[in-house]
Image (cartoon, rainbow, N blue to C red; front, top):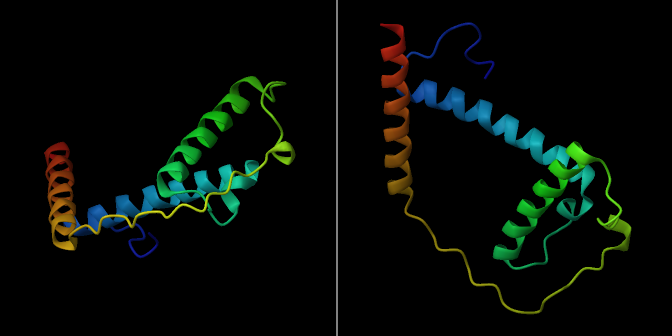
Length: 121
């Protein structure tokens, strides 16, 4: 993001990259906070992919609960958690066509640029 300095993005791709970078930094900070609070996210995953997705969601819910209500007597401490390892094979994720994602990215960038231009006029 520093590459832009005080200069405004000059085209749709630069605007998309600037916003994408800003969002990525925010998401990385959020995951850092989650990993500091819930150490299960800091370990190498041994659950199937679908379970990992649910685990992150559950950790977000617990994190928000703790922020709002404090530590709860019914939520076990991490030291009392027992892992549930599986020896089942996890199917590979479906490979997504890079070209279709590039087209989506370009469409989003063009829409951002159009919305930005509409605000300026």
